[in-house]
Image (cartoon, rainbow, N blue to C red; front, side):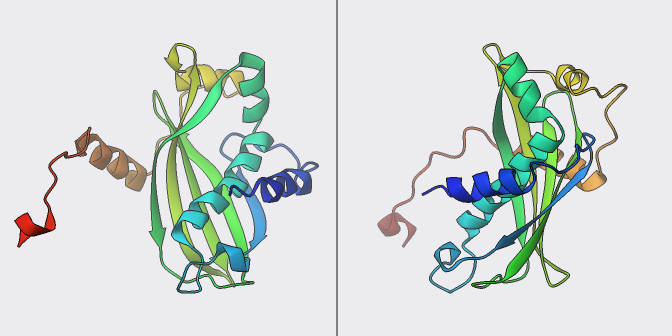
Amino acid sequence: MYPVFRLMTQFWLHRKDPPLPLLGTHVSHHICWPWDLDIWRELNNGRTLTLYDMGRLPLAGRVGLIRVLRENRWGLTIAGATVRYRRRVRAFDRIEMRSRCVGWDARFLYIEQSMWRRGECTSHSLYRSAVTDAEGIVPTWKLAKALGHEGPPPPLPGWVEAWIEAEAKRPWPPMTDVVTSSEAA
């Protein structure tokens, strides 16, 4: 079940935080609860992605994105993600999450997020997000203008560009060949 109460709590906790510029960093704090664990008693990888919502959506509020989406009747979607897991998070660990937009290209925003426990990074993610309307994807220049950003987008970090390039080479739709266990033997 999606943790709606936790998300609403994050919006409540950050309701009086000052607005952020489009490329500003939102910092939030979370606890790994027992129901966030997998059978190995560590933060479940799927729940990690859900917890990243708890930082990304309040970030969207602080940069003015949620207001702009409502005003223009636009939607927001995730178009891709990559996550690197490096350290275990256990029950009752306190996590600091850092969320920020690192830039955009003609179609997508790129959001970087990381989780930290006692000063050590436990995971790091990159999301590709798109704003949509009835016609499809809203060009990011239009979104940036609605958010008050003047000028060209900032250059994307090299590692983000490399991920975009790798994603462009990934086949779509994915392979449809199915090998059964008897065929593999």
